[in-house]
Length: 314
Image 1 (tube, helix red, strand yellow):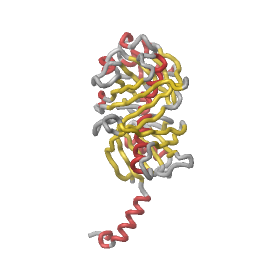
Image 2 (cartoon, rainbow, N blue to C red):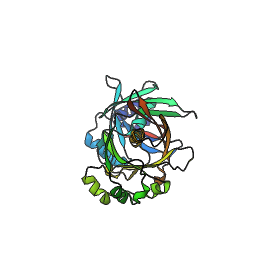
Image 3 (spheres, rainbow, N blue to C red):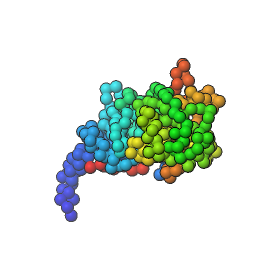
Image 4 (cartoon, rainbow, N blue to C red):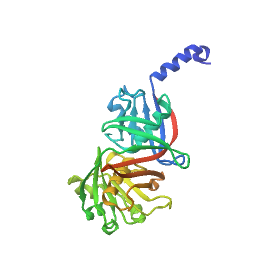
């Protein structure tokens, strides 16, 4: 029998002190419709006293595509301060950490499950709304920040860097860079076979990088494994320390802006289901809504979140 068993008051005091000296850790699967699918995210709550160097070390240790750090109290404007780290660096904006972090705050931090949680990020405040799907699942949605469509990339070097033929890239729309805090190259492919065979070779991509093209490459095609879905996608993320992202909200947001610009679908208002992550054995489903509102592009990205772990980070 230890001292805490003999003295329950001392044991309770020690427990309270230990909680004050630790940080709550939550792991959730984002863009997941079943357990152990989707994109894993680690969320550290109560991280206001952690240094940037410590946050980066924790993100590298977790080795997920991103790890987020949030204080337990909102700022005066009602937004919860959040910082996002990959294993390699801090980034300003990315999608699945926004949704997963807002879900954790809604269920474990906020005094009640508000229908909207606002996050304060480096790119500004991002609201995350929650609604029920037709199947009764809770879906989290964020509105993407304004996006800039930038330079078009040459087909032959991109195809070579991906290990595919240039004719396997769609000719009706360009290969284009889109930016919103971070930048990615959008590459439309002709077939699911080309999507599955693609592999980003950073050495072959080097000449493109020297021209300013980002080695973050989002591929998509209109062939899918599941007939309920509209698109299949992959996102090569190696430049941020992770070879491939199982599911990505910012990639889907970039895609929404791209599709509104180049109209590969005839519908004016897009409502799409995007399958991703099969190549890394984390099948995921990203939901995308995109359209024009008062002459301005509006892109919303959504998905389901499933809790996987709750504990304490010492």
